[in-house]
Length: 367
Length: 223
Ligand SMILES: Nc1ncnc2c1ncn2[C@@H]1O[C@H](COP(=O)(O)OP(=O)(O)OP(=O)(O)O)[C@@H](O)[C@H]1O
Ligand SMILES: [Mg+2]
Figure (cartoon, chains in turn blue, cyan):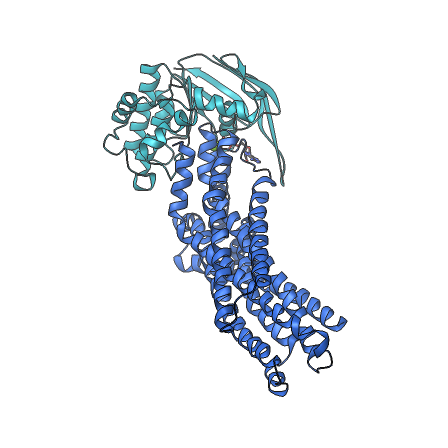
């Protein structure tokens, strides 16, 4: 076995837990997407000509548009989560890549490390996540409609969703590996890893010089410097938090725009529409559950990524300890850093909620 | 063996342009043991990275046994590092996912070469790590990790070893051990050694000391 393969496989084995989390995220996204499309499929027959005079047509049209928007958003969020997982993983690669470069690994060999990651870790995660999500959805569907077999049109739909998710997911990861030409060509170990230590020693210097006065302001300034310096990392953490919080917001928006379903169910119960409507009701209940699961997974992932990033910051923290910054100050500093991360994610959140809300409003008013 | 001519390197940063190397020329013979000293920021690491083909100069040439490292493509520079140059840094030398012997044989394996197990055992013995072949870097002390890095640099029988503050992170005893290893490589295996150092001890033991200031050689003495 070549050393590259050996390194790649050992890393994958070590980080299996994180990949399972990714798989769960993809699984839940698939489940939600398939679910929503299944819901739409139920609506189609009720929208046919023979029912066109019924008063809940407007409501059904609303549900359909709401569902479409949500499907697009959930798919986007799933892709973003995947992309970020991949990004963080490559960031963690820095030391290994730098050492490999310094002992004379050529680009092809270094890329191989990442290709193995994609082949052994990402492709199976995506395929498994999507596959299990689809199967779950089919199972729940047959549970909802006892006696009715899943027809071929529905299977077709599921298959298409699954294939599209797999193709887009894998395509995106492969693209993000190919597109930004990795700057690993002539990067030295020092260049890539020691960089933040250099910065830390500069900060150490400014801490020494000014710690006699205005300590509070200084800690804030150091925290700000650190956040600026690790800007990309912190933006990613912020984005992860924002993504996690996006799921429940999406659910709220969907339910808000499609209106109060219960009233409608009670008012219009007649003939064969009943079955479809009760299915609809059940789906709404399950929708709520999947959103809850998605939120939990989102937060778990956010927590894990944040942990990885903060672990990397520990070295810098030790530098501060060594110049006599008390531990309580270090904690204050990290808290200040955190605060700015949360602020960033709130800004991202408000911005994207605004856009999605506008989208919902536009589509609904055009009906 | 190594001829460096008119090397220039500028970095542009937010604080303006930094001249890291200023028309630096240097001639090194086979089998020399050279210490490069100088204030922090004087350009020592930059010079070493260029000799290792990890960074390219703006102008100038670095001839190692007939090839100009400064003009090599990334791939050719990598092949050269693999076969002719051993690199040791102050820290972060090892691949965390590989154990001691795998780290040592890494360059050879990357090159598709056969592993000479007898030579591996001999080197492990020499750096005092016999019995620790299976250990992973995280389970080694700083001094032990550094000895693995030295063993790896030596394993391919390179013509030159570039060491950037190899003792910077170590206590006196470990530093002395690293120095002893570098010296024996130089004396027993005839490997040319370039070591950037802030350590008095290392500088005293070198046969030639080059002092760099602001990217220029200000002193070059043999002792
Ligand atoms: N990637 C870079 N971008 C910008 N400036 C750089 C870069 N690398 C080095 N420099 C600058 O070039 C100069 C020489 O740096 P170099 O790392 O060679 O110094 P050094 O002699 O090794 O110092 P030390 O003893 O602290 O390791 C310094 O002023 C440094 O700030
Ligand atoms: Mg240096």
